[in-house]
Image (cartoon, rainbow, N blue to C red; front, side, top):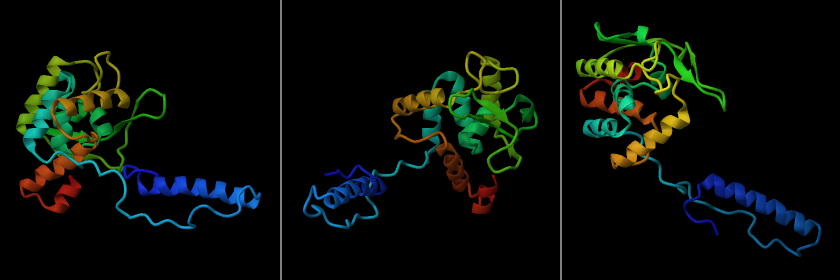
Amino acid sequence: TLDDSYARKTVLDIYGIFRRAMDYAVERRYLTHLPYPRRINLERGRGRPKQPPHIDKEADLWWLADSIVPHWRAWVLTAGYLGLRPGECHGIIRMNLDLEGGWLTVAGAVKEHGNRPPYYQAVTKDQRVRVKPIPAFLIDVLRNHLELFPFHKEFVFATREGLLIRKRNFYRRWYEALERACLLRMTPHSLRHTCSSLLDAKGVSVKERMDY
């Protein structure tokens, strides 16, 4: 039997393979009858519990930022407070970051396919350029980051070797930081939802949050 940790679709797929094998055995007279019911019923809610979608406490966001490697601390806070997708945060270009005026222009993202090196694409997932206001405290965080970790001449966030961030390397550091911060497992994309929660707590409307 399959335990409850397997998702409903996985169980149905396995059962389908087993059923076709048994049908073949009966057809070839290896078996006299089908040793299983023709249909099985599984509850819709079967499967692993869903991961928590996001961090909903501002203190936890800062705790996570302080738990990751130092040169990606600003990355966590930027994604969490500005609601950026991981690729968009990887792809922040220095010329699009106006720390004096307090604005960030999100005009592209770092992409990665298979074993190819990551590359920058001057288009976001939703095909639009977004201009985001940067909170004063985050301006200080980013200014400090650029002074301490000038790894790349063009991009704000990069590896110590001056390369664009690879997804697998970042995820490894990300999950290590979650463990150190004693937070439940979630993906970097969850910070986009964290931003929405923080804006909601400040009274920002749903429509404004969707456009943010």
